[in-house]
Image (cartoon, rainbow, N blue to C red; front, side, top):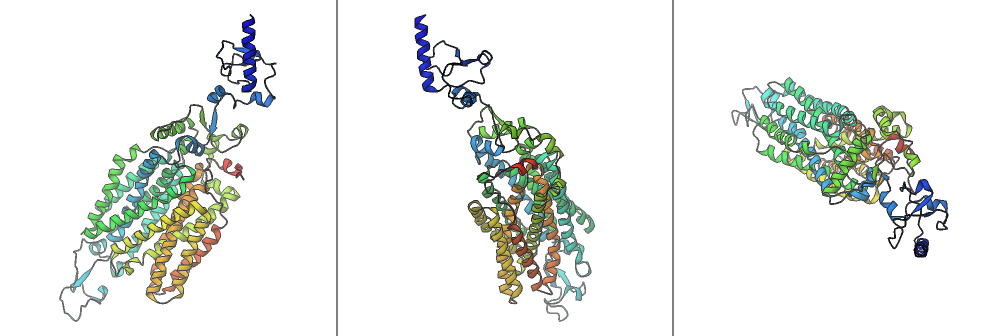
Length: 572
């Protein structure tokens, strides 16, 4: 008996040194008002409990806090947001996320090929006089002033849609009509598919559906029997590609940690530029517009069959729709592929709250399923963000596509070389922007890019020299490309998961409106060379002013709910 008392006294002295606390997880001791000693006894003695009135605990708060007890640490349940899980357990950009990002971003590579294929398919091919040396037909003559028997297409009538269907003179408007219809389809597709991917369908299903439709309509374009069938098919292609781009961007970036999200997101546009370069190289060796559409569509068909089925859904979408178990299971798979593990005690929460009481305030499934695009315009702060971004996207779309229409002229009419120069010029813009935005933030870099674009366009409007104006145009392309790329990730970060894809889709629709009107600006440049550059300058400079009032998102959490975003307080 004395031996047991002596042992208890030794345990007691060591417990004072280890400063033990009450174990909230011990159901045997707690009802009896006793202190669990299993993990605290330094001698592993068979003593289970001691009375709680032992003077071992400094205060009640220390008794209830399980952080000092090793056994309680192991059994403690922690609720973390997805960003916190990525930072602490999974890794912000491990091999698994890099593979996922690369596979999804291939959509942009394939989208660029099907988008710019119409530039070559609808071009005006070279022609020559039937009788060389004839005074009535010379190389400087207008086709419309010549009889059809006096000239011929040098590459044959199947070189382009213009030569096959006679889209010249009074029918030349049909070329611009097809391009407008394509971008009108993209305008509709970005909005509709953006909302659908935020709904019960999810990112992956919408991306798979639009990719399959895009490949099908791209292939059907090659077999169009008439112009009007071709116009309808190209409109449907635009709808599919518009949905592909925004959905792929969101799906590719939602699995990346906050500190890596900016640079990684900017690299998506390298895929787009590479797609333009490859298409231009293929078009240089293609003798028929129908053949070009077939070649451009086959890679997307293979992508739908071989790659997309193996791409995972976004864990943020799972969490946004009340499927926290599926979101956590997916994150555990990613962690395993990265050589890391997520403890079993980790649970997901919807937002970055500081206390469990705050978590209970958010009924995630109910709020997220009820939220929609219209909710953005019901809240003052979100409405101001969206209206500013809509104008910025409109300006980018108008300037980017408007200025690019002059690139073939820079290359002396060689469209392939003009597009290659454009794509190569965009690469350093993306690279420089990805470095700057991670160091200085999204907002100042966006303002700087828009200022470069606006001032360059202003210079192009003020000078009359053609070469100087083209140089200003190239500098403007550099600036607007950087702004166009950056505004994608900026928009995604400014809106929560429940409306993120819809917000990006709506903003992209504004860019498509700018793309539609870009053809009108290019037409005006034939008469008033200074007018389009003046419009571009005013739009870009106004956009830079509006960007000053957007909140900074550098290394800030990507919120899951509107309520969580509004209640979030930036730690000082």
